Amino acid sequence: MSVKTGIDQKRYQAFLKGRQPVRPWFKNSVRAFFTGGAICLVGQGIQEVIVHYYHISEKMAGNPTVAILVMLSALFTGLGVYDKFGQWAGAGSAVPVTGFANSIASAALEHKTEGYVMGVGSNMFKVAGPVIVFGVVAAFAVGLIRYLLTHV
Image (tube, rainbow, N blue to C red; front, top):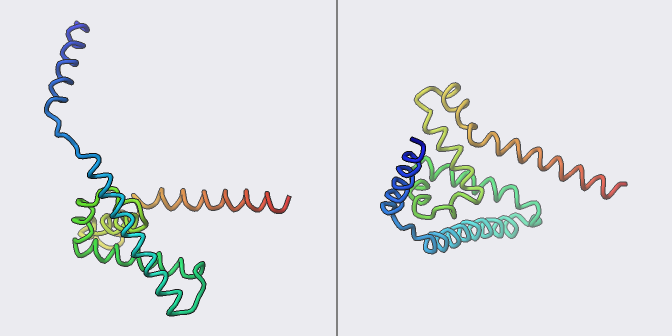
């Protein structure tokens, strides 16, 4: 009986393989590369404006630049633009910080009918929570290693 199941499984896998659409991986990769780069270029432009308009260092301009990118991503997610852009751009829209903001805003919008506390507040960090925890723990570990290397 197990031999027949194995044969049926192989035939079924062959059947599925013949029915799967061909994925344009090269076109998707190029599109993701250029759209991710375009998002980073916009971020660099925002940072340059902040540096030159407010006369602060590039290092200090990083935080407001990220905040503006996150705000724009959340705004475009709320308007339904970022999701359409994400479908077209693929991973190029998911990798930069804007993809992270999109995941938080999408979860918040999805659960807004459940109320602001139990819906939006408790569900918007389901995706972002592990990322935030990993970021904090990784930053602590790197800071600790740097401190030990410079002070020991």
